[in-house]
Image 1 (cartoon, rainbow, N blue to C red):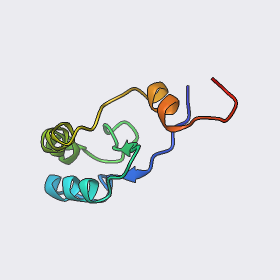
Image 2: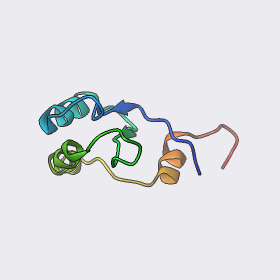
Image 3: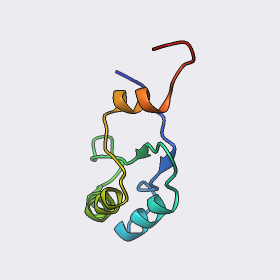
Amino acid sequence: MTSVLWNIDSQDWREEDPLTIYQHTIKNLKEKNLIVMHDGDRYGSGARDQIVASLPKLIKYLMKNDYQFVTVPEFHRVAYKIEGWS
């Protein structure tokens, strides 16, 4: 298992309105984003319907603006280059 830190918090844990989640995420976009969004109700954190509802608009925006979706290992290769390592 790989630990992952993010640089954009979608605030999905706080917000109940999908539009607010979308707006907060878009407002905080920067280069080399890793957006944290929570899933499921496995640990009693509540339903996540608002997150699912925010995704179509968010994905459409990101694709329209040339953002790419990559795996975590791909993200690490692109975002973090250690000097002297290949």
